[in-house]
Amino acid sequence: MTTTIFRLMTTMTFDTHQLIQELCEADFTEKQAETVVRILAKSQEQLVSKEHFDNRLEATEHRIKADIIKWTVGLLLAQTALLLTILPKIS
Image (cartoon, rainbow, N blue to C red):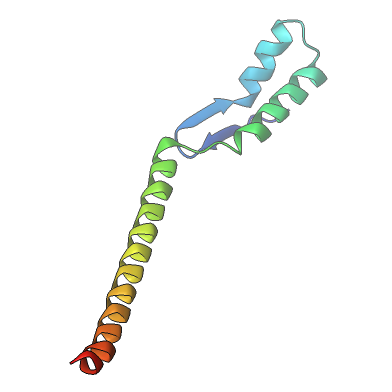
């Protein structure tokens, strides 16, 4: 049996060998303990750290702000073009 240490976004680690030993001490068979640890390790792959989540959220906020600026500038240019077209006809 090999010892593997899983790292999750550099914030969470656990020693699979130690966990298997503890489960065996709690009357799990070795096969049951290994299965539990394997399932636990796989489920942890889906987790993200707060730092990773915050970075993704910040990047999304920047994209949204950029989109708002693009739409605002586009609308201002369209409004200006419309006024420049209508004003000479009114005067």
